[in-house]
Amino acid sequence: MTLASVAATPTATFQALKCKECGAEYELKAQHVCEYCFGPLEVAYDFSKLRGRMTREQIQAGPNSIWRYRDFLPVATDNPIDMGTGMTPLLQAKRLARRLGLKHLYIKNDAVNMPTLSFKDRVVSVALTRAQELGFTTVSCASTGNLANSTAAIAARAGLDCCVFIPSDLEAGKVMGTLIYAPTVMAVEGNYDQVNRLCSEVANTHGWGFVNINLRPYYSEGSKTLGYEVAEQLGWELPDHIVAPLASGSLFTKIYKGFREFVDVGLVADKAVRFSGAQAEGCSPIAQAYQEGRDFISPVKPSTIAKSIAIGNPADGVYALDIARKTNGQIESVNDAEIVAGIKLLAETEGIFTETAGGTTIAVLQKLVAAGKIDPDEKTVVYITGNGLKTQEAVQGYVGEPLTIEPKLDSFERALERSRTLERLDWQPVLV
Image 1 (cartoon, one colour):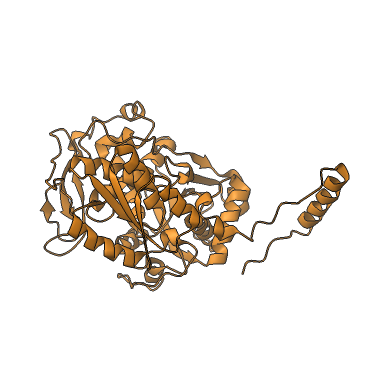
Image 2: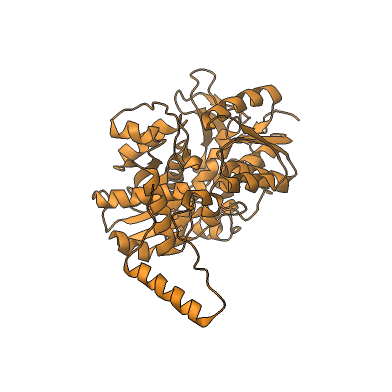
């Protein structure tokens, strides 16, 4: 395997890696930290090649996946790894909107994304396509579950060797959802931040392509497609307000970047979009900094059922803070009971079963509406990033039980009456 840089083609828009802090530029290789100031690197583009030339019709004529936006992504090949990732539904959530008192509420539903039912399929598709271009034959990641699922599945499709690292206490659905693709799985006795530190050592020692470490500049760009798709699905317009979960903060910053790139190229009209973020109280370093007016993040030790967003030392936390503040958005947190209630609320009103990250986002949406921080007239988009089938443990005991009956009509009638009685009493399980 070679770690040599693979340059962009002459017609490609991505030009270099650039430090977000000091502006130093680097070759397009597997590197994620600036050698001068240790700031994070991200991909720099020259969109002058697209400005005034890229049309909405050209994009719509492309594949029904994230690769319709290939010219905006950091890959050189005309044959990326395409498993149908992206172009997930943007649903007008009328019943949930009525429940909350909103008029224009939309759900961007990545709980049905391909191939592994989370938004991580987007970032991994980009990262592994770039990994192949850079000559990697073994890929890896540090993951709270969804990323491990995506990395293992897409590596299998690409024929790449795969070894992933997860905390040892992950939900069973996420562990099985990785093992089925036959990667090597390392379950580390520690939290995500400890897993990530170990992976940095492994990346340096073994020279593997870690999607969220040495390949992170390319990987994170996949999240921009969540911005592109929403703009396209809204009829080539930007929303007024978005609400998204915050883990590392990268997703939040890349949706913002995606909107700005479409404006810069001329595909959508410029518009002020408010950005609000959601965290679980048991791991809310970004929300705490926001509430306290700080411009720095103090790491915390995670303790929440929302394991997929439980990153105690978020790499892009300060950038997420900046975006929320400069767009007049908010960052809020909710407790575990509110997260479960959020999962149930979305399921009962819109028929979408989300995991704990989505429950966090819906609960924060509800909290912001109650506090008068979302205008009922705003066109608000809520990002649901993962599927509830992966975190069933979170709602066990809170959703009732089947009514067991004999195969007789009178047994059915008695059970039906009991069920209606419970409905009249507005019975709900107690959250503890």
